Length: 88
Image (cartoon, rainbow, N blue to C red):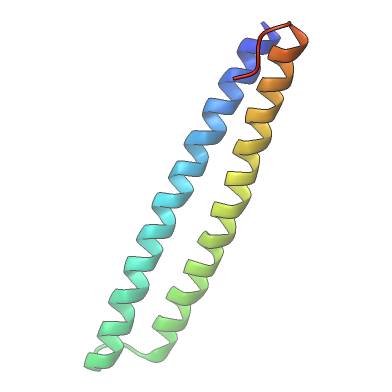
């Protein structure tokens, strides 16, 4: 039961990491759009700055969720090793 929980935790953490990567890609696209619109003169520079800040926050979230996913994976592997399962 403990190893099943660790496995599900690892799967959930991996899904959160993938979601964070998708959000980062969206933030990158929004920054590109804001930059293009500023060059066209349709938005103010503050909008580009907001998009840059949002992208930086998403990059940090990608790093944090990737680390969490790796920790969850290692926790699962430790649980399996304690049960005598061969390493993956």
